[in-house]
Length: 486
Image (cartoon, rainbow, N blue to C red; front, top):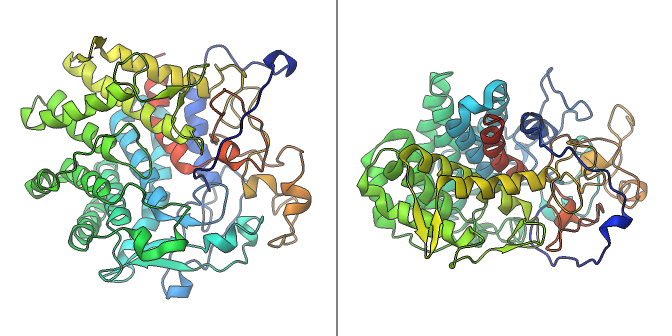
């Protein structure tokens, strides 16, 4: 589970570590392929014959039974064995946005991207369609799950089922689910029209639920989602995000009118599974830049105000950078913010290049290349061009995290150890050992270094060592962008 806790401070001399450097020139194509392969390691449900991360096996096959429905499939969010739909839906939206914006640059990885999206949307469709008037939003008791260190294949904790309804609303998780389904409908429009129509039909229904029954899912579900994935930003950003994606997918004026009536004008300097304002505004700003529709100029202005808060030399910058040049937002799983914001940087850079657009942050003149350069610096840092000369993507380069905070990776596979490993039996000797994890979760990007560019590579240090689906989902687009440019 990747959420905010206090960071650790370390003083070190880099020369004492003797760390082998990764390649000086990042191999974006290799990183792109691995970033998508990672999702196979997070799969819940019955695995297909072509499963490439072979140390994983079937899990969660009874998910949904406690509510009398089938909720198998989907992804475990991070290093635990819980399915939280708010971050899973955001993961799906970002994977879909990556396919929409960078489809050609994805090249042979486009099919892998679609496969990763569909593993999530098949599950989200079940959640939205299983019971009329109800949206299922999670499976697994996070409080009991986090007391265990066991493989997903061995889970013996309660697979509790959580939902929102008219009497217990969740506009945030419903709005994000609608966004995910609407974005995915665009991805599958040509390759699977029937599936695409089901996605958009369901997206409309879920969005209507989000609009009609206002409320935060954190208030409805309490300790089952907090402090893990509380909706700290409220639900207005998800209403804006969901409506923006439905407008993009349908062109129906109803959604544009709703967006205008929402009055979601909060300023922001972050973009994440919780706060969608920046992403929604950039999505809407595309109409102004690419289609030259001046109706959308206010969103372009908001998108550029966001960029001015991110750029390091902007007089309006509110963003901290490490000595090594990494964007540093929050101590808990900082790379989730880096990858999400980097996605916005490359995408807005692309829009600016299309329209030959520039803007100013006070006395700072901003071009498409300004944003592209900053985005490349962030991606390259993650791939090893940093003071520790360490890749923060598992399995990429020669030096990468070996002790990630991830149950399946740190415990022996079912093939290596067929006997069940119980709830607490995994702590000794697997959790507390300093040995590297036996299973490599290829492509996983961890929470990353602290504000001084230091990464201890300790399994217990989940704020820095835990991977998450939404960290990876956001970097797929930028990796494709740079892979296509070399």
